[in-house]
Amino acid sequence: MPRELTCFIIAPSNRKEDDKILPVVVAKDDKWGLSELPSTCGARPCEAEVLKVDFDEVYNHIIGAAIDEVNKTNPDIHITYKRGQDIEESGSILEQLIERICRADLTITDVTSNNPNVFLEYGIRLSVKDSGNLLICHERSKKRPFDIDDLRVIPYSTELKGSREAQRQIVQFILSYLKKNKDPNPDGQAILEQNRYYRSVELYTGRLSERRMTVLARSAPALIAQLAERVFESGEGGRELREDVLKYFTEYKDALLTGQTNQADLIKHLTLVSRIKGLGRSRVRDTLYELARICNADPLRKEEGARFRREAEALEDD
Image (tube, rainbow, N blue to C red; front, top):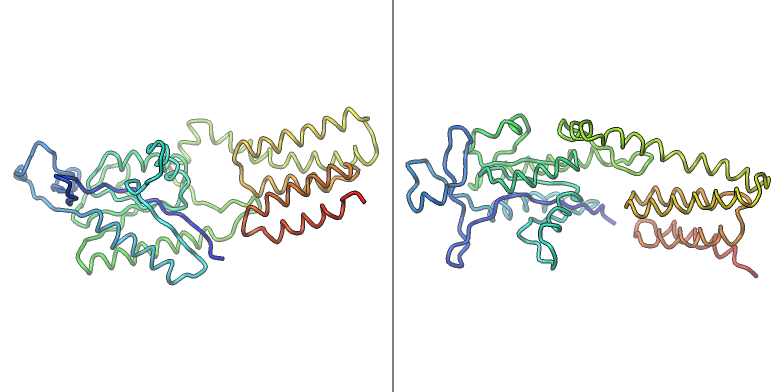
């Protein structure tokens, strides 16, 4: 089964006029590169050099074509992609938009027209995900805002040569990112390359300390499990202590579920619980059944789920 990934496209939308979808008219700006032509200019170009950019064409024939090429030439990978204007689900558009920005494995952002919505969405992305973010821009735009001026930007044009070269570079970026993030670390998370924005947000909001505490807390279940084995095996501390230990394990499991922590953490924790000596046949059996249920929900863990189920069935009362 191929590795499933998502890519969210952050880009301006073509303009609507009399039920027609038209390219966006952008004007050359000595300070900002290319900017969308102000509506007050009307049909006149305000004495500025103008260019029409069809962002639907960029989306379909440059970005989409590049991702399709990755899928076609790499059968072990399948990337689905979407942009905000194509979200058709019911409910809050803003919430759905933010969810996709935050959860996407990759983003490709078109900063051609200095669109404020684009920069807002890109800023949201940087605050929660520190890698897998690519910027693209029309080749006629020679300047960009200071905050992103030193970031890699792939230039494109809608002419055949320019579009093919942009496609090639987008494919190269995606494959390079996937290569870096191919092997998970022991905690089941991909190893991500941090950038200055994410580090700064963590540092100045206290999230850096929070992350360190989270990493330290991950070792707690294993340590408690070792102590619990001695408590249940020897009977030291009496029933009250054993109930306190079980309460801790239950609360920790609930915290993992509520916090939407990586599934691997939950499975690792419940596996530790199921291995505690003297815990009791029924409690171990119920834990194994829960492990089987969680694993069976993941197509890649079906075999693991079947093993847990067999272990649970072996503990059924005669």
